[in-house]
Image 1 (cartoon, helix red, strand yellow):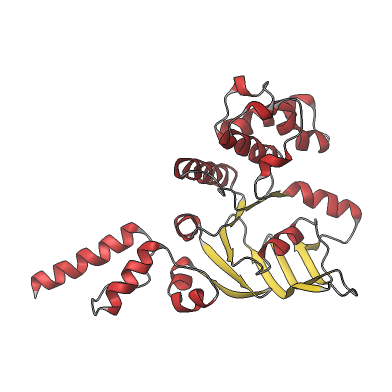
Image 2 (tube, one colour; image 1 turned 90 degrees about the vertical axis):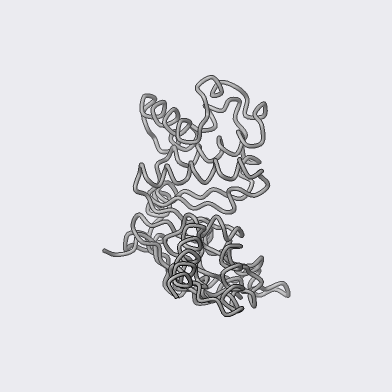
Length: 288
């Protein structure tokens, strides 16, 4: 099966031809598979935010092509517009983009621009609100009366109400407390399960990425530096540290135990894996 999104050696230069010219990404080959949950990592300035803005046509590559379902998203204005509904992008701190009189109208904004009927818009608004945990009574309130976490949920609901086939989220849990972060990730996973959509999660939290991603892409210096399963990526802890990134805390502990001579799995990245590895070691010692 062909990837739902792929880039063919795309580059993007900001302020080309001026003294402020900056090559943000260079010859990036990147793809998102149908229905996968992809984690996108990279230090500040690595190019990941520029990359994701190409995936739904907010930015046009200076060179190269972006394909959605095998077609160049810039092949026609009609195609570009359609992709912006099919590839939903949630920016960091999306609550700052709320602007309508009510939460209902804010969530309905995207479906309305899709030209859907009033009945279909209503169904999608209430469905999206339910996914993110907003109650029906909150839909008629001003979004500015909501708490910070509720605003975040409303903003995410406004994107998923369009039912995109690819949902991209840039640091969706930034600034939230642990419970809020857990809730948001749970809601994103619920959308992923219910719709079978592909999800691209941009995050600095190694724990979030480890718990959710099927595959991880690491950006560095405007290019793709690593691409693999969480186990494959976190096994390369020293390289990640060189890029200013860390591994999940549980992996750091297992690496330390391994460096001390214990025969544990240094690539374990979940508590369950670490526990099984340590218990196996204990059993082996007991048998010995």
